[in-house]
Length: 179
Image (cartoon, rainbow, N blue to C red; front, side, top):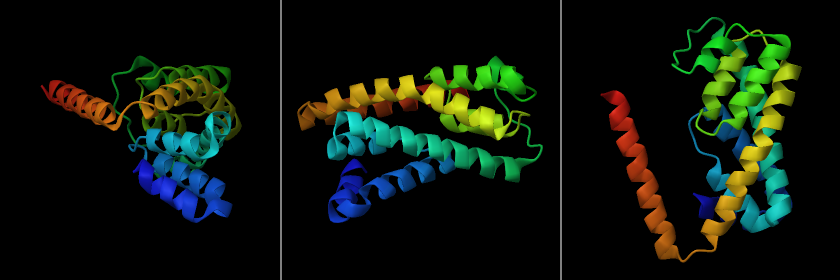
């Protein structure tokens, strides 16, 4: 997927920034797609610092647009989660909602789409959500970008090995959760 995005950037250099942000918004709206391939493409194409900035803008805008869409569409959907912070967020507003969104964005194992959905179902304002979500994405994005940068420097055989291990871990966790 990363190569596909890089090819788009290369073929439409004048629109690479817009393409990257558009893809990030789509990934965010979908709620379940990983953004790491967009981050990898951004770092490869734009360079490390600019790639992080482009990724941050895309992810922040994607989270804000997703929040708006989810809020318009869900009204009173019951969000099922065992995460106490997600459950608490459903009734949060103001400063408490802001801090919960910020904390959930900082915690790397809480799915981004779930945070957005829970935030949309809460009483938090769009402005508070936008600021907290964007601030919370910064450290996670730096960690992701740093890891991606180092993985991209590895030989392709090691990259494939890491991808296989990651897929196996996800499959094991998925089947463990089902039991």
